[in-house]
Length: 331
Ligand SMILES: [Zn+2]
Image 1 (spheres, rainbow, N blue to C red):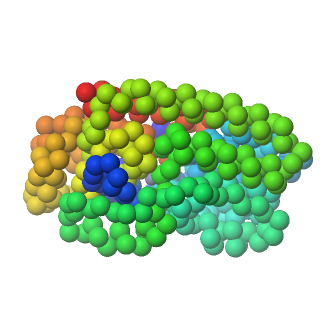
Image 2: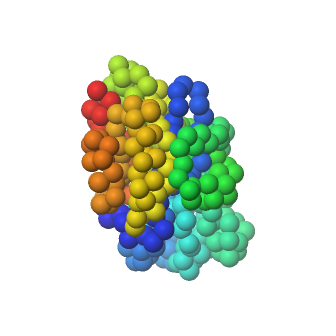
């Protein structure tokens, strides 16, 4: 999967500090900023204006597409607004997005402040019939930020982005289950004729999520409080669920690391006895590489599922790879 991170002008590397047990972290001071790719990359975006007898559901970005498609199956047409591989956090809507929403019956979003682009887009679409499903309804967000170590520019971006807590709930299989239930209930409320299908599909997917959850529990229970560093604040829910720890918030400009930045990260890693350094699939960043060498830590990847395949099974494929990576890194 092509990631766009590497092309970004103000891409920032972010190391988050996850402290022990009940430290609740929030926020979405993501490392990756948006480099928009063309919407033509999204096969789903093209279907926007085609008439269909089926209920038309638009979803915001890949994880919402995967969970919604799993529930809807073939009973509804499911589209995706943000092309996979395009950074969702700072996404700017396109005219095609407005068209897609204008002709949709249902909109499924992650919520928790992730899809900032939606507000104006939905307004511009002028679709009074649109039913909006907030997949994170009822989920208590992790709000508290624990920036243990930060470099100079870190705080500015921080403030405005965390009003709704950290949005990456889909990366915890248990909360993903909650999202599937929310989506299922929303679809049934908006499209009752397909209730039986939505119910059955959701049950099957939830069963798989339960299985995934047990796999995570089993594989990580022998590695309590494994501490790692990542550049994208995407895993606080996962870490909290399985008793992992992440350390240090450090934002680093992509083009240049000052000696002070490097020193801050090195000190942090020593201080918290970090076991692993995680980048993202498709990210090829020289600074990350040299940093991991300086730290004498292997640079591995965790998948936040913001890019990937559009098959609902991709969720399990990617999460099992994440589990494998974590289990090995935490040994
Ligand atoms: Zn993210």
